[in-house]
Image 1: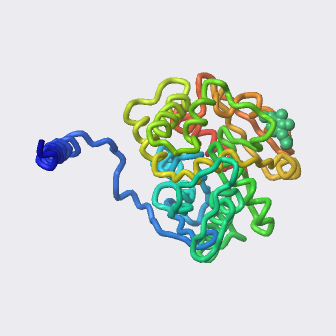
Image 2: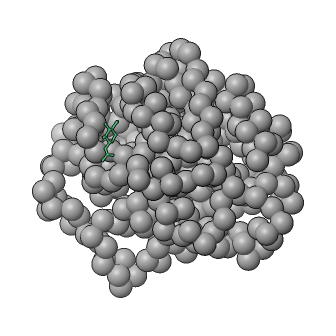
Length: 332
Ligand SMILES: *[C@@H]1O[C@H](CO)[C@@H](O)[C@H](O)[C@H]1NC(C)=O
């Protein structure tokens, strides 16, 4: 059989169909030219971090750090809410390994779960290219760039973290105590990943995404399972595909970084800035027990629990979430 002929016919048919499909079914309805300013900053060890900025720079700056395996676009429901961008200065960015940011890898697939992967990037060798410290250095680079443009003596910064975006925000405050942060919002956030067991429903999915062979099929089925467990009511097919599509760009080194232990419990107990904990009662990724434990450590804490909401709070309960976020930032 002439395989080439078969394939070229197949490719042609695929292109023709996809062109029609893209033209007819827009997946995304938000305006393209919405005033977002996008650029790169150079983060830890030379890694380029992609940043979006929007809103009124004279107002309080809200910096959104997304969750594990998600890009900055997971904040779309907040980004396109005029109540937020007309009253605040919004900043979101892609973690290293996600979206448009650089994705350092080991460039080898001799992967062994017992050894933390290391990368050489811009002449620097990192034991874990996706460590909390490097992610915090990226956030520092971003805030450094903002402070060269805006006077943070005159205005405030609030950090908002979803899921693992919270330990990144906390670790940033721990590593860079000279930068004044005025408030913190934990959205289904973690304070440590030690001494707790994952919900048994999601354990196989997380094992799939860190399988030592980095088997494509297993990784995809793990990611698929994770995004089917992230909300209480199922995500629409479109939204599921959106999250899945964002997550597949993460290299193995990013995925496996989730198993590196960390604890910010001690640091968080010393923090006295206003902190809002937003919790989904049905969350099986950051379970209620962990969320309440985290909140109990704080000194200046407000806690809001949403019923019938899972881990994907920012999409599952957009109206209330945005309203509660605005109220909190306005009080600071
Ligand atoms: C981490 O969190 C859990 C609750 O999820 C808690 O039981 C445990 O003691 C914490 N570990 C550390 C080291 O603080």
